[in-house]
Image 1: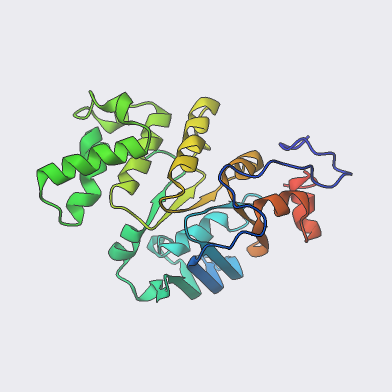
Image 2: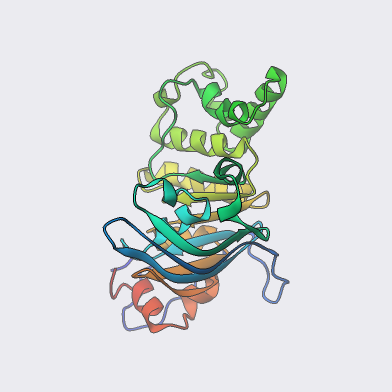
Length: 279
């Protein structure tokens, strides 16, 4: 049985709207990132994205779901040009952040505005907890120690980690538990105050308790920035997102409000996936 416990012969069951979801008929928030005709692939010739069109709305959580190899991670890596750091990787199309062509932006500037948290926690191994969070600030030229300390504490609080590490700031970040390390990476991303935060299956390596903490965190910070999360966990998508993207074989099959995607999908392939007929 699939994760949503749906009968394969029945339409998708009702799910509660995600916490903080807009009421039906409420005005939609402005578009912060837009994607038009995005195609991407790798050196071996495999095309990972097949002309994706997408609008990501400001201060919302958008979940991207789909089976393994469908292009989810490639899509979000194209949003902040992490895809291009892979040797032989390519992408073409139009990706805009607040109307600006991301391909014309300095990648360092872009990644300051569009941060990323990866599948496995990756604190810098030679740095302390404090240094991990401060690293982006220092890289961007901040030298005022008082301002750095203030921003580090603020970011750790926003990541719901301050109380757990305030007496360990000089200890290695790698000495924290897996869930704490992932929240440390979130704090590191938040410290430079991004406009958009991309998350590539951030809970896949975590236990259920740590996963719940990350989900609670997303609901707490989503009014402050835009979040795009790739997940294999459809229950997680239903819990935390206002919008959901379903991808299959590099194609964006369906995109809409999460409640509608899970209860009244317009494409048979979406219904087949969320009811467990494949994937």
